[in-house]
Length: 312
Ligand code: BDR
Ligand code: CA
View 1 (cartoon, rainbow, N blue to C red):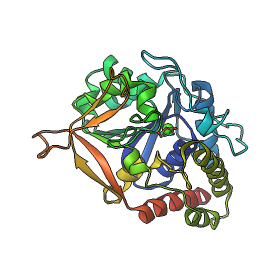
View 2: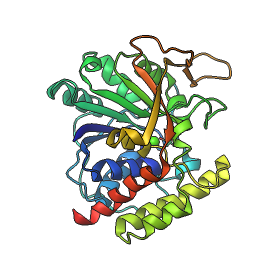
View 3: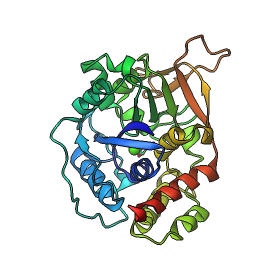
View 4: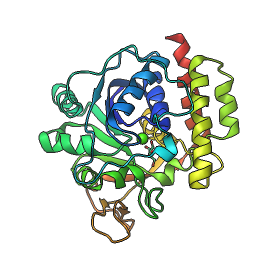
């Protein structure tokens, strides 16, 4: 199984990413690290622990990371994720505690203490922890297997006309992460706007009939309303598990190689991820973008992971 660290800010879709990563046998979820993003750090950290309880994954350690971006002011996504960060469900009291190490140190120690090329980083929130980790221990850039992140987009934004939330909240950290020599896959809005939780998907989940499936449906109900009211969607895009699905089965997400960078100074474009699609991609290009999602196979992975909770 692929060993991953999920660096997240739960968050409705982050919660589904946790359930998928913890429930699919192709993934070994060695730890969850949290970062301020959709809500404040204390809230998203508590949410991670609550989700682990619902998903019966309480053996997975959780470490809290950075509470604020490297340079800019804290900005949360309350309109999309609510006051708790996971509105729409009754959050169960966590049964485990957050680890005492800082998330940045957990990330560094895990990559340095495992064999080279065996740990994959999956960031699904702002990139503050990952940027901090590679500045504190630059050797992780050569030792990590790859970075597969949810963030950005090459054609569209959601927090500005051209920028996506995870990137625009901490563009300086994103700029660090996008310019390290590690292999990096950007699973951006172009891809995740294909991961819509349609009524047919909800029926598939509802048929499971478990505590976890009801929890996910509760999340989707709130998420649907938020995306209808705030972003003009009929069905909500469930972004973050797409990055996990790519690691479970790369054929579910097609990709294209392209040099990537993050805009830091544009008057209208701060936080934009700039993909250079001029062909051919330069030799040794280490970055790629996710392009096309196999919708049905993606949701089958998620549904199976939700169903697997009952067997734990
Ligand atoms: C990203 O922003 C957050 O609100 C979601 O959890 C996702 O990671 C989508 O732009
Ligand atoms: Ca997220």
